[in-house]
Image (cartoon, rainbow, N blue to C red):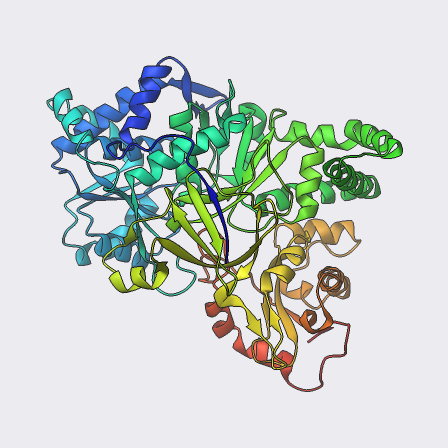
Length: 609
């Protein structure tokens, strides 16, 4: 058993709760800009810390006037926007508990979150959200209040609470201590029914206070700002949103990823929060754009140079010739990419899936340090993260202050500390199963280097054991293949089978661009593309490249391109875009079996079935 402990750098305060983070921020910098709201002309309108605090208090009073009592659960279904964090803090100031619902949830999922949590009120954003809730409302007798953001209900709530005193809000906000429930977040449910994770006030307070010190170069520098675009219903963005209030980071929001580049250009953030798919997309779009303009070779040479430069820099010595090439490409290529992201991005925090060393080095050469981290809903997001002062590309970093991480004898990662959740809501059996004393068993597999930097090697439940007894971690093959611009998703299969195969989907956004750049019919449908020789050859190339990193027994020998996407709507992806492996294996069992019928795979080559 290998263990690394990172002592807390901020003394714990068991009496503190999440409202103290905002109260302390108002006392420190009342007039600083804490949020920027998008305006109709593409600009941004400032909201100071004091203005935000006043809006939080007014909304908290409205909740109290509406009959919300301390400890009551309120559901929230809303995309990433300013009001999300406003409602979050107002709920805490009213003494209540927020239950996030993904804005993509089905009526059945909405019903489960609200019924299981015992919510007595719900805040919805759009008419579409309301329609999904309304479908199951008759089966939710406990729901007394329903508010809709797009109908102006938050303003109405705030104006209805003028009769509630400041003293009552102060009393309520002080009721909760660190060990009390702060929020109930339902896991995204890649296996089975979502479980409610009870995160405490201490989880947020202690983790924010310690993380702000550990990541001070990112969040505590003067002028630090970020544009949030991943869903705040997920713990990753939710934690960063609360950390930003604590640290005084200016925050903007853009939930529409199609508008992301224009918003980055006008907002000019200093750091980003993203999942690896976003970094892959930025790279792939840039590469295909260069290809379309006849500059594909230049872009690829620039990318290779960037990776070589960053790798050499990390090793401690950059050869003179490489420096010269790098300077040239900096003017031709890298500067334009930096400009596309607003020009000020110095750091990007990446989580939820492995990024891959090549992309890590590529962005690092651009002057953007991607700080990969690791965590789960049960660890209030981060357990480990690379730091500005201590970073290794390809790892997910060392333990955060106040956190201990160990690797069990079977390779499973276990975590204990200030970030670990209290329990699964109303589910003592699941809680008992997932703890070994104070240690939370993550279900992920990993390894440490000698400096305590963690690397993730796979999911314990996802390990494939072939008929020949070979243990295969799917992620080691899936992640590099998915980085190809043409490929949407990859699902490696082969449990109890004679060899490893893969189900592949094409990226519908990138497909026409790629086809056009490769002198094929850009109007081809996804279904037609599954049998196109050029497409099959490109998928083969991506698989061959991934196969080079594993032993022959672990390599992919056959693949099938599916004619449709794997999406959240189809039931095959979670809201954070992780694959639901069990569902996919069941739904596409016919295609999987077809790869194993007939002739055996030839060694060293993938065969399209």
